[in-house]
Length: 85
Image (cartoon, rainbow, N blue to C red; front, side):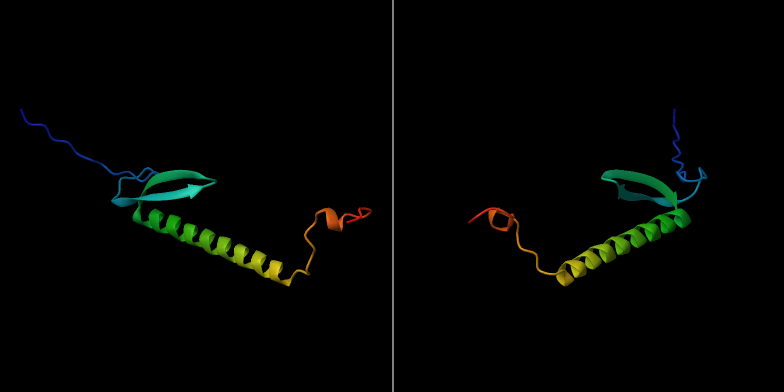
């Protein structure tokens, strides 16, 4: 007796049968894996690119603010008012 198996790929986003690919991404420290048709895979990857660029811009802006900040002494015993060194 012969057996035929058919693998059907379904897009996780709209449940349609379609050829696509598996997209991996992380969100809030958790890893997700989604089977998506090509249009949805492209949308997910585009959104991930936007998030990466926004994250990089935020890090760069924080670094620039840190460079432009006035020098502040490192607090310890010497900078506490009322303490004699």
